[in-house]
Picture: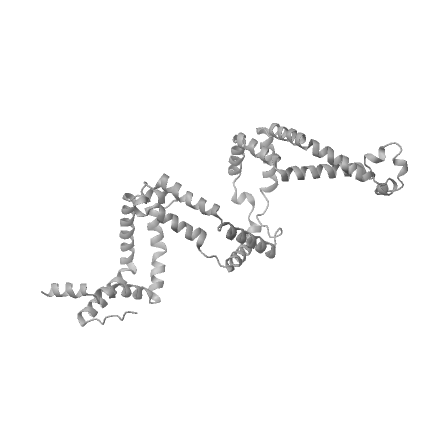
Amino acid sequence: MTKSKSLGDHAQALLEAHVAFEVDQWQGKPAAGRLRDEIDALWQWAERTPLSQLADVDTVRGAAERLALDMDLPDQLAGVIGAIADTLVRLDVNKQTRVQDVVDESLFEEGVTLFVELEDLRARLIKRLLDSPVYTALASDVLYQGIKDYIFADTGAIKSIPGVSSLIKGSTSAVSKRLPGLEAQVEKRVRAYIENNTAKTLARSEQLLLESLDEARIRAIAADIWAAIHDKPLSIDDVVDEDELQALIDYGFRVWKELRQTEYVGELVDQAVIAYFDHYGDRPISELLGQVGIDAPLLHQEAETIAPVVIDGLAETGLLEELIRRRLRPFYASKAFDKALAAGNG
């Protein structure tokens, strides 16, 4: 470590005066005026400076990759998030706040209208859903269980077949004992029928859904949903307990850690930055800040509200003076200062 050069009497006196002046300028009324001047100067610079002049796309891509993909995420983070999430879920305000208190009915209606208008998208989503192997398997199993229960239930179809009902004494659960292999044969035939006809059934279901979900039906369903939920509390603490919530967060955390190691996510991050620069690289920084709601009046407001509290805290703990002194002292210990002092005295 380089040893700091000791200051002469003149340099030390000037340093102390400079430090005291700067500390005073960052507190009280001088600080408010200084902050306003700094913000105005910053905003004027932002209005005339495009994003591409501040940083090039490769620099931002590198920063995005480091923050999104390379920055180490400690395992304890999931626990911290889980604890905070559980506290929020258990708040009494969730039980006291109803759905209609946070979602206005008119906003809900706008969402319904949007859903009605996006007819082509709705059709594509229905087709994707019904074409899904998961949905097909689920639908097949539901159909099979329904048919099987109908046939073999105590009040089902098999009991009405002439000659069969007389073979059944008591519950029809005895069918398999009295007629060995019957249930297996029924299952085999029913499953074969369903497998052969599922595609046709789903195609008819798709057409039925498309025809049924007209504007009137959608609005009627939406009205029923709103009537059922609008006065319900937002609380979900009776649905998920603390351990379950933490387990879900742990899993989501592991999924994200896994995803961020893939080339896919890296490519998305890269292309997002490139696309942003392509669209907005030549726009002034002030305009880009405005797109996320930041303007000069907002900066003034926050500076006048938050900055004085932070600066007062820095001053009270001694850090403000320490920061200023550490920033200024190298100049007073430099040859540049000695040269300037000599020139002034000459």
